Length: 292
Image (cartoon, rainbow, N blue to C red; front, top):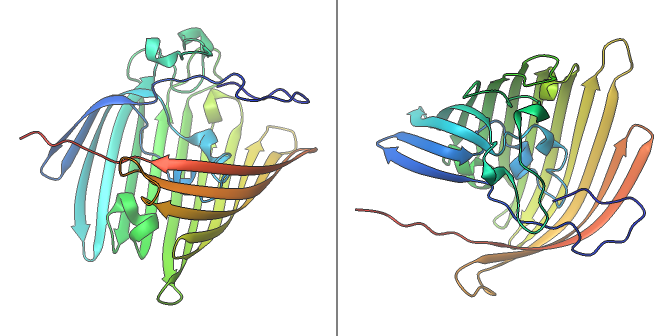
């Protein structure tokens, strides 16, 4: 819930819990509707880049914890399964923006920043297509996929301007044998007045993952370049190398899927270098209920 303190050993320190999404979803034919608190679709690097820390830097441009509505429509062109989603939203300033145990505080208009203005004043467009699978599961199951995005976030108090952003991405899966698959992914995003600040920003993510049955070996690289007026660019580099093993549902108690991963990350931000070694044990729960 809060950033670590340099030079201090911490164990489960400053940990809290909060409501990330709370919304109602409706599906009518090929149209999907969402209303409530959600993460508007814009890119995928913050979600699917492999590795324990692969998504950390790309997560800086994720649209998360917004309140509003979105409309999505799926259609096919030739062999491609496509989906377009348009969302209108604002930053969540309700009591759901707070957290339990360690309280991160409630968002207010005085916090400023992109999208933190009165009413529903920001929009995002995400257009994706996939060969061999649906657009949502293209990285895992598709043969080739693409993604384009655009967004506008109205600047809040103390902002230097309104944020605009453009994004493009590609992914592909290459079968190297009956049990060996190479997963490739890249995404680039550009922003004017990034985060409502005075500077532009450019992100680039590339990754490769070699999957052999339950084992996955991955490397990922992300660069964030802040283009500062009349000064040298401020650049951050993040490299991640991870090995993961998926147990599937063998250890599950309620049909959850378990995975263990070990990895190394190198983060260079200006003159500061950080080396991180980590182990992660995770479980995925899936389930739904249909109303008739």
